[in-house]
Image 1: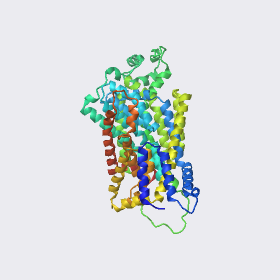
Image 2 (image 1 turned 45 degrees about the horizontal axis):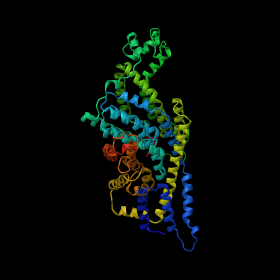
Image 3 (image 1 turned 90 degrees about the vertical axis):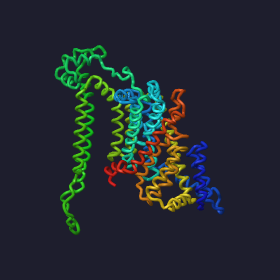
Image 4 (image 1 turned 90 degrees about the horizontal axis):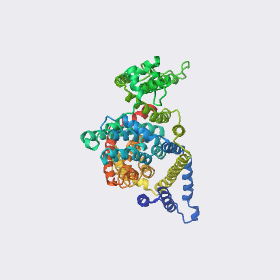
Length: 582
């Protein structure tokens, strides 16, 4: 039975009931069953034969057999294992030393760690709480403004749901019927671009008003250097890279020195320090080699494989289409590649020219704390983006790698493992029940005619594509104030999806704009879950209003990021189009 007015009442009722505090998944199922019973009601049939019960079973089975959802528990498990077992404190310390000469160095280090840790875990609450414990008090003790300190933690902590691998992207892919891999590629640049805008805002505010982020005292920015390095410089060279290279061929003088433990310096220690000094060069060279291999060599080999020789043409001969199109990248790639490589070489030369013991120790700290997690994250993303594995298989690789890193760091015991598994099961069950409830709710909403009525109303407004884009994103932005991202994507995003084709809007571009938009859902009162996460671990004198005030500028930055993404859609669509065509 079609009743559009009843369908719209159903939609408004779900918002009211959720805001009253009822569980979202069971509210969706309850309202779907209640209104569905009315929609399918037939007086000639017994009530137990109502087709809403069949619909409930079909939608539940559909959620259970959805292949896309299998990756959710694995990515969530990866996040919880990393949260329980990895060395965030050491990472924060090493990154803070790396940026010690910048204005607001503690805030910059906090944003970098939030971004990096958000990529690895994808759990907003975990990142905000962790950084609130590790970074909030040090920033307040250093005299940082409360709004600056709280804003950078709450805003940086939300980046985990935007930058892949992200559970939010998987949920949208399942709802919209889009490729998880393509959405991951599309969200990559916007996520890092938003983090860059946050960084520009922090540095700009600190330079305009230095009193909000005083310089740290020298004792807090001093890099701990082993005593043997100063004697080593006197024996070989002031430049540690040159000195270590010389010591590998003439180690006798170096081995007469005493290491930190009082024992003579060994050749293995010299080799390890020399290897650590070469890490920046090795990472830069590896990046350029991989780009060159994928863009030039790999695509050339694929083009050769697609056109095997020795086969005769069947049917009519092909009309001469003119000169053959050259296979390979355009000339502009080689020019850009050469310029960037030259710039990188200049930066590396300048960096290594002043390779002192402090710089070497910072490299060693970064290598031990950031590099293992960085390698795991890059591997997980690379195997997805380059089509080596599916999203589910890469999630399994990430979960296994998280366990290996935690075991290697000896920070994951049986109790923490049980907690990670329990929290994974709890989160996965919540998401899956949300899918079941949403599927039932959406089906009944469509049967009652609510979806058709909304589409007719929007089309009757005779909007242009940009006006529809503004309207849809404004509605989602407003919904982010009282609701969380799960409810918005599962309940309200499906209402807009059928209209995208009419306005000629790419669902990938629109989806990534929604992802960025939903950053504001964690930063906008009255829900603003990031504020409550931080308040739970902050000192008593820090009020919720101060945290809210610190988050407000970042909401404006989110809007600026969305405007730039719409004006230059290549930020979103270039990478997926390049990797997969389109």
